[in-house]
Image 1 (tube, rainbow, N blue to C red):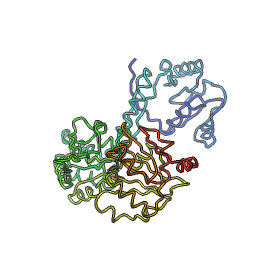
Image 2: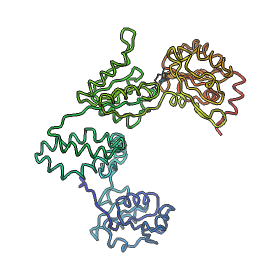
Image 3: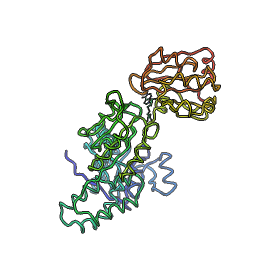
Length: 479
Ligand code: SAH
């Protein structure tokens, strides 16, 4: 069977849904969204439908099915679980030359309702003619991930300027070039950035000035999350799908890079050359050169670009050179490692604040406010702390943080090789050495860290629980 695809304008038209349950409710919602005047025929309505009927949003045809319900409507949907009744509806509809859909019954249906990706006015509809609804659903989910949510606004913009565009580019090839620019260029980015007025101006400027369509480069600073590719955001995934060039840190693993466009050029700027990191200004120059060559550049960083990621410097540099810059946040290591170690960063009984800090660099020991960090009712999440673990522990103890304060050291957080080492603060340096902890690793210090002993749920747990801590953990259940 081959179906004829069709998008129906039902605005203001009466349509009928037969059935008063959840399935009917879903159909009614979609029809109302399309502006149809919905009549619902059923002896009983579920609470949601009853609410709509009470509010006058739908008209309720009370009681058992009557063929007269079909009179005067443009479409009918049978959403009952009574097959004989559905068949009757289908036959009565056929007699009236009325298109009918019987939910989950392709044989009785004259029209099918597709799986839809809605970026109105853009609609992508998928049908398998009822042969493989599960496949349609999967395709829908895939496309849902890929299609930017700003596309609807872009289509609306294109629609509004269509007459101008046609007038300005009577030649079809030139017009195509313009539309390539419109759909690939900076306008979508502006809409994604909630800058509709600038998007509008970009289109008008382009209509005024452009002859051909020179590509304009851009840079997106993207947070790749802590390592597990499942923790990428949809925006990150979309940026990776569109990138021409990806400049990534060493922290970004192969699994994450595998999500990128196949032919994107991947450059490791976290690589050590002769034991030294690629200098930051080299990264700056690379971003700039590729963007100026019209490339879509993704600067991909572990975790979040603005948490110990030098994202601020890179953004400022790009701005200084007039390069458009979008930021996609990522799940930062503290948030991800805590979650994957079963540690809530805040807790009503134990921690009212969280401090993200780094113990890296020669200045850390002198510039951090150790007195404040020793406050018992806050959680510390220490980045890049492993090499300076002795100093860190000593300073906290010196400033009065209790020696039995729980810690959890999370190595390779969210990756299959994750290890969590948990114990009391005074033993932190010795335990880190005993277990030969490497990078990347994050230390969480504070009462909440004790929860790792009981609630770690991912990877390996190396628990060194002192008795005193054990008693506290018992009352550390979430309220
Ligand atoms: N921008 C990143 C942090 C970069 S600094 C973010 O937001 O997460 C690098 C430090 O982050 C590492 O030394 C380590 O302390 C921490 N880190 C990053 N990924 C980690 C992981 N998967 N497991 C444990 N710590 C991690």
